[in-house]
Amino acid sequence: MSSATLEAALAWQGIRQARYQDWSAHAALTLLAGQLQVWRGGAWRAKGTVTPEAAALLDHLLPISATPGRFVMAQLGQSLDGRIATISGASHYVTGEASRVHLHRLRALVDAVVVGAGTACADDPQLTVRHAPGDNPVRVILDPNGRVPATSGVLQRGDAPTLHITRHPLPRAALGAHVESLTPAGAVDLTPSALLETLAARGLRRVLVEGGGQTVSRFLADGQLDRLHVVVAPLLIGSGRPAISLAEIETLDAALRPPCRTFAMGDDTLFDLTLRSGHAV
Ligand SMILES: NC(=O)c1ccc[n+]([C@@H]2O[C@H](COP(=O)([O-])OP(=O)(O)OC[C@H]3O[C@@H](n4cnc5c(N)ncnc54)[C@H](OP(=O)(O)O)[C@@H]3O)[C@@H](O)[C@H]2O)c1
Image (cartoon, rainbow, N blue to C red; front, side, top):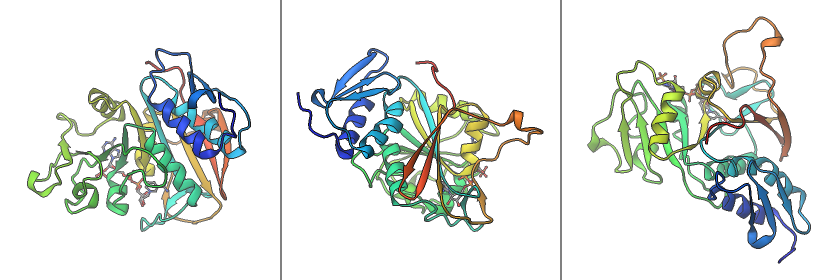
């Protein structure tokens, strides 16, 4: 059994291995040829030395990859004053390079990545895994009013299968072959829970809601998030698109205070919030 130093690249391999295990059938598993033992839910123990960077990765990513069943998380990169973009929608980049690698790792740990129409229009994001080894998730674009142009990269470039969820489907011929249009049945709006049911029926049970603020807020308000990663960058934008917006409350007793751990991420800080645990397998 090897007891070589466990560094970040190897830790990431272990986290990816964990992502493909059946955690409903195992309380604990040994990964990385015996170097890493992982318990369901993400606790871990390693043989030999572990670098601080590898330990931090295992701490904040194994709870995602070693949790059985449906798992829904969101991540936002925001300024100190809670903005995810300027008022004109410019968001490149609020957070630093290490946080971008983190986001790509999250994408590699899920079956589907969800963005709202606002993000698809403002950023035309690729939503692929490029800054870490890993597989691209299915892309899901929430566009009930058909705002996202057919010419956008996400509807043209076949980097990953793409679901365009809209009441105004675009002509088939205008879209790349990788795109499937889905129309929410008769609904005026698509609730996050209904959307997650639709995705689960297609085998997409591990979901990352990647933004923007309105979309993440809807999933949070609907009680659908297991985990929320808020990456806070040391800048003040002073105005612009807000991160989380929920219904108004009168006193701070009604504020959400989920269990929270923090991790340094370059110059940024990751706030890793557990919103739900022990959900249905
Ligand atoms: N810093 C970051 O981490 C980050 C991440 C992502 C995006 N961004 C930035 O954030 C900005 C966009 O964010 P945003 O909050 O303005 O918009 P957004 O969340 O991207 O999109 C909101 C829109 O998506 C549709 N939508 C979302 N959830 C839905 C649901 N459950 N059912 C039906 N429709 C749903 C609605 O479209 P309709 O309005 O057509 O009904 C809604 O208005 C952009 O500037 C982008 O660059 C930053």
